[in-house]
Image (cartoon, rainbow, N blue to C red; front, side, top):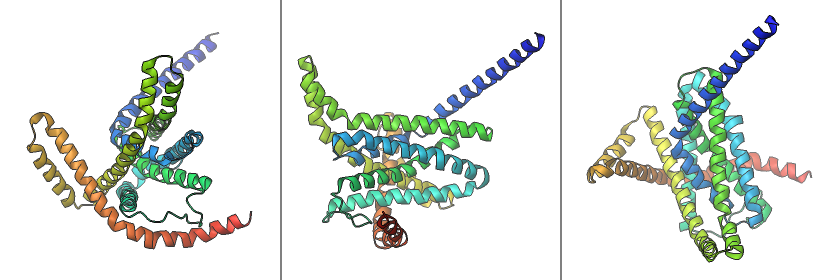
Length: 328
């Protein structure tokens, strides 16, 4: 009996330690996640545009595919790589993030370029026209997952830097919790946004009260403008985050001049405002100039990406894809 009581006492002690560890993980995850709030908002703004224009029945399945890809990005790729880099090669983090930032600048600038100079339509790397619904859906999902990878890398890096120095497994558990929480928050919000028009239509048709039917009609009418706004905000967010990553990385590599110029210019703009809005004005000015830098860098990268990188990528991987598909 005494041995059994001693065993139960040990189990209770282990349970208390485990509970304390869970509390520590959750507490650290909440703090680390809050540090990455800016990148999270960007992710939520960028994602809805990828399901815009598809049949309503395909919207939630597409969001689920993107969310699943986002979880894989965070938990399978970024979490172990981030921990390994942070512990064994921290000097590689900035260059890799800068590469991702350059991709965001390229993608954002390419969207602006196509908006200003629309072509005859896009053709995929396998030669299929973009008006093929299944192919277009797959393209959109893969494009969203690629963009999510860069934003998730930024989120996980910010979260990792915000975790107090602790053991390897504590950091891993905290990052995993951050990754799951943020993915659920982002893509739950995205799912809500893309189905708001359906909910509005249901309220307009089946609402019991006049005010609910009016609210439903207003929601349906407002959704095209909201989705267009989110498309613009998402593109601006990519350019802002991409430009900010590049500028921050240049500072980490020892070239502080571009970031200092932007900082001094933002302070000058903020000094023109009242003390109440000083910090907000400085932040907005900094974000705007980071975005302008992202646009300029992206416009330089567009011809490099479309004329050099994309054909080279297609030459290396396109033939392999065609040979695989031709075998079916």
